[in-house]
Image (cartoon, rainbow, N blue to C red; front, side, top):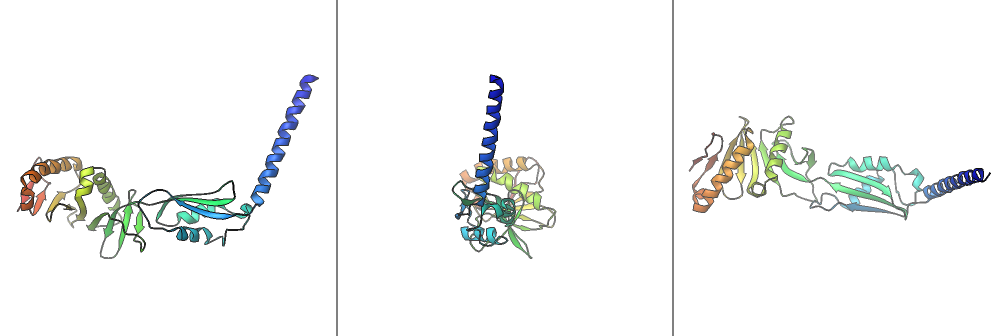
Length: 239
């Protein structure tokens, strides 16, 4: 008898808690949104303003403020925010105090592509990011023989350069010739680096840094017009 009473007590307790949770949840979703808050993940990019993100939130929903939580489609709002090409990720949720909060991470450009027909950034994934009137990123410039098929090739090459502390400061531009060879522009002078194809990239970068270690010390680097890395086990320079 005592055992049955214990079971009945727990059943009633669970039922009560379920009812209270359901009642509280229903009441909570009937509450109206007090405010909208937008937070940018820390970074160096200023492509977007809070006003621009706010416009993305209301483009299909109208004025969100004062609307009950129950009519807000959080997943739809996230989709609207992510439709902006400057945004890499976004999370939209309600806070306990009735605020609709959006946390946004902007894309980080790694290079600027410039062709006869268009100009845009690419991020580390090779995603195209349009130029912005609000912000100009200081990144290396890519020119020459560029198309949709070789965009990932450029992305991979730039990511390798940026992974090296010295190279990311020294190399400021990449040009791809019609012969599908790469020519690099540098920060330290007017000379060009004839890199050739993207075969044995790491070997070529090692040769370049070894050459720099000597050429910067004796200042012979100032005499050269081109530095050619295409040949096996040697660096060929032209004055």
